[in-house]
Length: 272
Image (tube, rainbow, N blue to C red):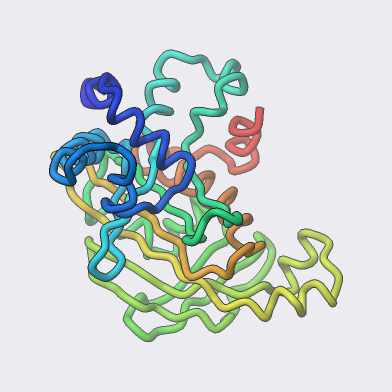
C-alpha cells in the first residue's frame, strides 16, 4: 500500500491517471501530448504507477499501451471500509473496464490483480476442470490446453460441455494462456431474452479472444487478463466486462483462502 500512496502523492501521476480514466489504452506518445514534459520524464512517472499496479501496460506490436487499474485503490477501500458500506464507494471498483464509445478506438477489457499464490497453483486454477468449476460455479471451459486444441464450454450449471468452436491460441505453462472466446449462443439469448433476429445479427460479430499472463512478484503472482478483438459497440464486451471481475475475484479468494464467494453474492456486493 505504501507504493500506492507514494504514486498518488504526485500531481503529474494523478493527471496521467485522469487521462487514462478518460481514455484507456494510450501509448506513451499519446500520454505525452499536452503535458509539456519529456518522454523520459513521463516514462519515469508511468514506471512508478506500474510499480504500484495503478497502471497496467500491454504490448501491441511495437507499441506499449497503458490502462488504468484501480484494483490497488479498491484494496485500500476493502481494508478500511466495511462490507455493508461498500455500496457507497463503488466508484473504487475491482475493475476498470473499457467500453466502446465514439472517442475510443480500442474496445477491450484489461484487468490486473496480484494473488498470494504460486505460478504453478494459478496455472492449475486456470486449466484444471475441477478447480475451474469451483470459481465458475460449475460452468466454464474445459480443454487439454494444447495449442490448437478445442476449448469446450459449459454455459449453465445443469448443462453439458459443448464445442462452440473455441481453440487454444497460446499455452506456456505457468506463464501465459490464450484462447478464442465463444460466439453468441442460444443459451445466452435465452438468458437475456433476445429474439432470434437479434441473435442472428449479433452472431455476425467476429469472435474475440482472452489471454491470461502470469508473472511472479516476490511471494505472490501478478495476473493480467486481456480480453480483446471485439467489434466496436460489442454486446459481448459489455457482458464480459461485468462477468470477468466477479469470476476473477472469486478465483483470487479461492486461491488465498481456500473458499470462494458465490457469484450471486459477489455481484450483490459490487452493485450494492
